[in-house]
Image 1: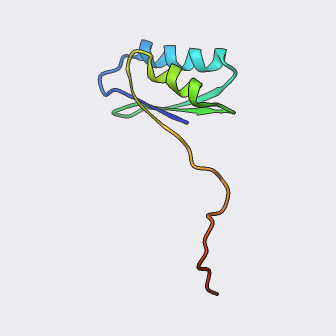
Image 2: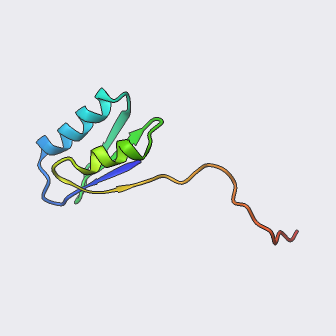
Length: 77
């Protein structure tokens, strides 16, 4: 999941999100930018996303797509 921070979020807010993720057993990678983006790796559920979304400085949560191939009923080769 990606945690997109607000453009004006402070380094302390970014660190707080990373710390909360590590406490929950996730690995984090911070991509500095405007806004900063934090990649949270590991098995997570909707409840984890809700907890991250409520932290100060978080703008939104983006979920990753499943790695399964798309299902199609009209396959032509």
